[in-house]
Length: 480
Image (cartoon, rainbow, N blue to C red; front, top):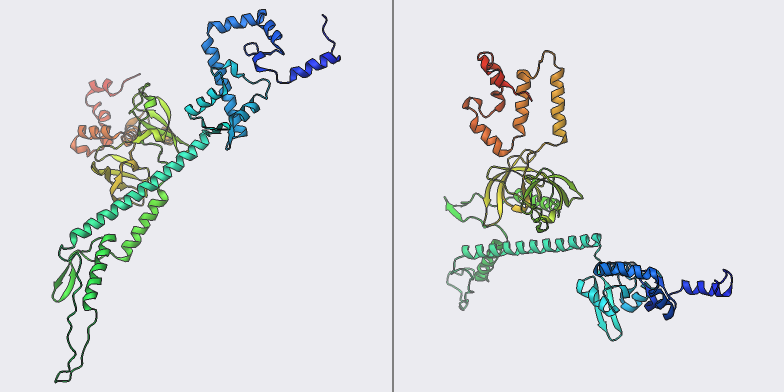
């Protein structure tokens, strides 16, 4: 039978039918061919091309079915995200909208036989919120976009920080109440009101004026109550001692208005500098991500080379020298030994460098002394472990540029041959500045007392001794 011509009614009808959606049971997903009736589908299954596709399918059926299932799930969720991102809708409505596209992945080629099984799968995996009602299954899309998750994470972190602040405040109030109870004697904790003695008013012979004292005992009670409440919310004042008829405080006086003002400024500085990100360049951190345990990075230390988007750090591992990009949630600060240099990464003195003086393992805090800057010499009594971190020793681009400029300047000075004494002295001075803490301590132990801890002062010794002991000349340098 000949083929119908292009403009014949039969050819036009065939094209109209081909554009529309046909029955899904007559669709071959492997060949991506839609048949119009059962006879056409049977003929297609017997064709040579379909047989070749089935041979390919028979070699690895699980891989092909999993691939179609993943593609069906991805396209279905993408349609949900575009059309019904924030609404609760019937699963059948979403499915009918999805299959309206003629080139969609059909469900008969996936691991799910029915729409109900697919909806239950979405609920188990947490990709949609699933509800079974008398009118059928209803689903709600759960937005797991990276930006949405990040905002939700920040929101939860702020809520946790607020709870922590409230707990700290309650803890301080409880401590002050206990301190007040210990300072008040047991017998005078609560003053009992005194019963007024009833006496008749009689005029004496001397005709003196009658003086009536009302509420004398009640004033004492009120005074004691006010004093006890003051001890709860303020620092306890020292007891007063009577000397030469005057009342003198043994503790050196009460807090002045200047102390209160300084305390308020400290609180304001803490509030303004307290952030939810703490990463900064040049500090040593520890990787706490168990996902990186297989590659040997778990609980390994590295130095922060670069900070991206405030929350992600580019870390160079100290042992392997590998460079990783890790989120700050999977990092932990490192506390050096006593006397080590730290950087305050969060709080009121954020960005300042300090020296570690003492570590309190019971309260998880440390005592540090700030070095350099406008707060030089200030001692912070209790800084939490999370707010300080060990400072690493490395040379950045600016340091290398400075050394290069110094070397070029030395080469331009006339009369310098090779390094010479001035060159050796300069290089030793620069090298000592970039020694690590352990190396600096070891070098100072090896130096004689006459050097007074200055490495550059002994760097000239080989230049001086080689002219007295000629045999030491070859030991003065090593050619590469």
